[in-house]
Image (cartoon, rainbow, N blue to C red):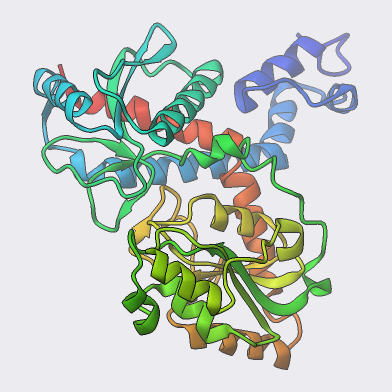
Length: 385
């Protein structure tokens, strides 16, 4: 009830916050300010018009759209529970990169595998388990549920039954979860903060990564520049406005590795603090999509140069070209955009600002866990029991 007829009681303020924002007021100052509202309707109006509530609405719409995009291929398909259980058993026995998760009574576990699996897959499986535990600690239990997650970089498509993965080829039917690197980076919070305004950065583009892009790079691949990252590194070599490095030589034959070293690659690690000095930071696929890299770049105050890719993450279609990143078709585009920035200083500041807001709001922990919760809840409803 109204506290003394002059304003809102603390209990009413807390009740409105829990109802509309699913949390308590931020601090005592907030409570004191809202206690001046003359009635409950006024209090609700103030909270609904607040930035916190508007953020909640944006996250809700983001989650709704992303969940529907992933589940649309399976709606009306009629996945039968007994058949699905058989498919999960088959995956667990025959796919070393696929793990079966069971959610029961608000807890999650990984079904033990009967055969040894590569350590990297076991590690990733545990990281996905951490995401599910974080989700269950905050958001409603989606109900008793079993599902398969393929943790491989390039998980193959399953067309007969749904399997979760963290990236896929455009048009594939696998259902996308947030990638495991959100756990590695503690939902991006462990990455160095970019405190340099866009206007104070150097007009250049930067990239540092490994020689991924083909699972075994041969000497002929080096000579014919068939691997995109190696092609770009050679194309940009010697330019002052593009710093493109390959400090880690991997997936190469000994002859190919030696050729790359002779070409001057295999050194020059670049940390995020150094990358942030550039107005533009490049993301280019390696073994599939670069998972956390584009999200980290968008979270910075630099602009993401995103080379065209046929690999998608769960949020890929929610981020818009020329709003949240600049699409790159070929290496010449990088030079063209840098020249446009040179002709009109800070021309692409609006993209840096929009992408930072996108990443901080829609790729933060709250949105990630809401998406995971909504995805599993809607997925559970698709299984005909």
